[in-house]
Structures are given as structure tokens and as C-alpha cells.
Amino acid sequence: MSINYKLLTPGPLTTSSTVRDEMLVDHCTWDDDYKQITQQIRKDLLKIAQVGDDYTAVLMQGSGTFGVESVITSAVGSDERVLILTNGAYGERIVQIARTAGVPHNVLNWNYDEVPQADVVRDHLAANPDVTHVAMVHCETTSGILNELEPIAKVVKDAGLTFIVDAMSSFGGIPIAVGELGIDFIISSANKCIQGVPGFSFIIARRDALETCKGKARSLSLDLYDQWAGMDGDGKWRYTSPTHTVLAFAQAIRELEAEGGVSARYERYSENNEILISGLRELGIQTYVGDEHQSPIITTFFYPEGATFSFQDMYDYIKERGYAIYPGKVTEADTFRIGNIGEIYPDDMRKVVEIIGEYLNQVDTQKGQEQ
Ligand SMILES: *Cc1c(COP(=O)(O)O)cnc(C)c1O
Image 1 (cartoon, rainbow, N blue to C red):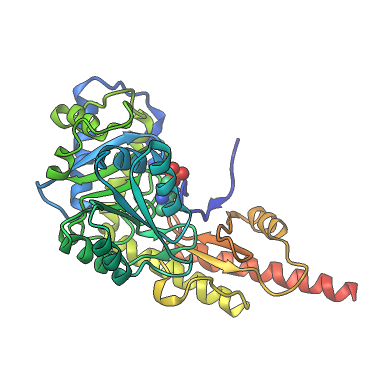
Image 2 (image 1 turned 90 degrees about the horizontal axis):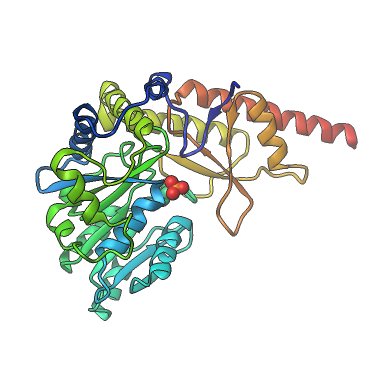
């Protein structure tokens, strides 16, 4: 079977053939080579997060949501309370996690095209002294909006609270000074900006914050403290690990370094994103998020004007020409999304703009003929 299109989706995404090649061997999990690979990944993740020895990295089986669920259900005790900031589906998923596990929580909502405001968070914390943790999403992949970590981090740290960040779709693609911001737990997964394949998530945590998780977990397999305790000594995962994914991820990290690290990757993603947005604007297609908050990861576009537009029709047209795009996820408008992360380059962006231009022309011509 051969798939002849590239993924313009925010993960799983298009990986390099060298990353995929790593998965052609079956590695055992108990021997020193393998445990060493795990330990090297954990070390490399700390470097990517710009943190020192006061932090540690834990790898957790499952997709990104498993990592978020592990943190929320392990870090927030039954006598504590987490304030969750939401402006999209992934913030709302954190609320769902808390509700399902019975984790005490408060919620502050913003519209999907607005970023969480630090002064609102400050007022809420002043009025709710029982809040002990604050959780938010960095890049809300729902819309592509990039939430501002710095002002919120300042409010959370001024209040002496624990700060949890879902940086699933930004970590490795946008520089984040985790230590400087005082983030206590930051979560991402193998198949986003590090450009690996799906199979596990990872958590970078301040050691002293992680120590407080002991005995708090509501789940055996998602117990963050126990996962860390098992892994920290010699790199042994508690339960069967996704070996092929781990090997691919180690290679993906080497390729991130070879590209020039996070700042170089950020430059490439930003260039991809600028070409995409300016190209589609020339075709009369507008973005949902204002430029000041648009992430360089994924962009939500309004449907072009014209009653004959069908997303499915355009999707098929683009896919036949080599790219898979993404349906919209914002609730109040007709939109589609295009991601520009993964093994994707400016030429891909120029090509996809050209294909969409051709498609719209063809639809226009058909319309003309019908009249
Ligand atoms: C991808 C993503 C997740 C996790 O999704 P999974 O499908 O569980 O991998 C969580 N939060 C954000 C912001 C994401 O982009």
C-alpha cells in the first residue's frame, strides 16, 4: 500500500523517511541499550525545555490526552482545586478530564478567537483562595490561536500556585522557557512538533512539584509519580512501552538538533505559515484568528465566499494532488484548517496555495457555465 499525500494536519503529521526507517526493527525493552535510549530522550527533552536539574522528564504510554490526564489526576489532590482556562476544545478536554475523575476544578472561559486574560485570572484567584493549581493550553489547536504564557505565568507564580501547561502542539516548534516561566508541569506528545510518530506523551516536571504527586493518583496506569519512580533509576518503563515509536522519536530528536534546534524549526514553521496565509488571502480566503494571536502551527480559515463551496469537494481535490488538509473545529463559523508542521517546507505551502487557487478557479468556471 502506498499513500501519496502529505499531511497538513497538526499530528500525526508527515515525518521524514529516516524517522520512519527506525521502526523497521523489533527492539526488546529490558536490555541496557533500550533503557539507555529512554534515558537519552529524557535528557534531550530537558534541553529542549531549557531547564536544568531541578526538572525531570517522564514518558507516558498513549496519545497526548493520556499525558494531560496523567498530570491532572496525579497532581491535583482531593483537597486541592485546579483553575482551568479554556478558549477551545483542548482546554475543554482538561475540564472533561477533571470532571470524569472527580478532580475539584473551576473554569474560566474565553471565546475561541480570544486569548485568556491575566487580569481576569488574577481577580478569580483573589476571590477563590482555595485554588491551588492553574492549567491552560499554549497553542489551542482547535483554532490555531497562540495563548500567552508569560502574563498568566506571572499571575500564577505571584500567587504561589502550581502551573500546568498543555503545550502539545507547540513544544519543540516554538521556544518555551519552561524554567524561567516557572511552569511546574508541561505536556506534549511524540507526534507533534518533535516530528515523531504517535504512541506516547511526555511530561516535563519540576522535581519538587512531582514529589508532591506521590499517592494522589486516581488511576494505576496514569500515575505520574509511579511512572517517574520506575523510569528515573534506569530508564525502565513500568508497563510495555511503544518500542518502535520510541526508536523513531530518538531519531526525530536527532533531526531536530541537526535542523538547528527549536529556534530553527520555529523559523521554518513561521515561514511556512506566512506563505500559506498570504497566499490564501490573495485568493480571498480570510483567517479566523487575528494576526497578533495566530500561531505558526495551524491556521483556521473561513470558507471562501460563494454558495457552491463544499469542503469535502475541495478536500478531495487537494488530496488527489498530494496533500491532506483538516476540517474546521470552531463552533460558531464554517471553517477549515491547514497545519504547517512536520516534514513540510515552504515549497509545499506554495504548492498547496496553487492547488487551492486552481480549485477555486474551476468552481468559478463551473458556476459561470451553469448561469
Ligand atoms: C493534539 C493535542 C492534544 C492531544 O490529543 P491526542 O489526540 O490525545 O494526541 C491535546 N492538546 C492539544 C492542544 C493538542 O493539540
